[in-house]
Amino acid sequence: QVQLVESGGDSVETGGSLRLSCLASGPHYKRDCMGWFRQAPGKEREAVATIYAAIGRTYYADSVKGRFTISADIAKNTVYLQMTGLKPEDTAMYYCAADSTAASYCTGGDWTGDHGYWGQGTQVTVSS
Image 1 (cartoon, helix red, strand yellow):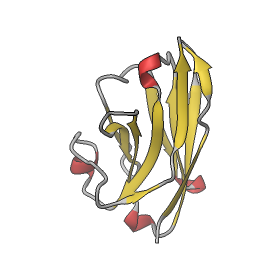
Image 2: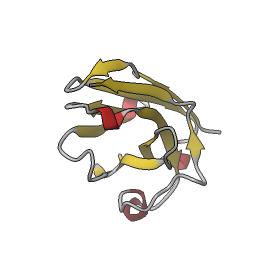
Image 3: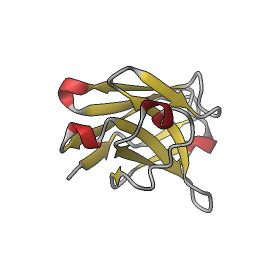
């Protein structure tokens, strides 16, 4: 079984930075695709960034391109989301997800994580 534990959420001002971490455990083959999703109150969950770490392929939502960076430390079983230039619209609960999928699906912008594993979430609040 795969378990995911997020950390790093906080309250920051506009323009601030945060780094989220997702510590994963369980079989590697069940979590070769990992990513960060977010959900704000009253809004649907959306994919923020995904990574297929074995080949270093990534995906970013248009709203975060150039501001957020996803990375993975395979040895530490950890995926990070470095967030810079934070805006109030980035305020949301951020969730880490993992699944076993093809790299093209993982980083093609269509992976929803619906059939994968999820963490409990970490709150990011950006004040104006």
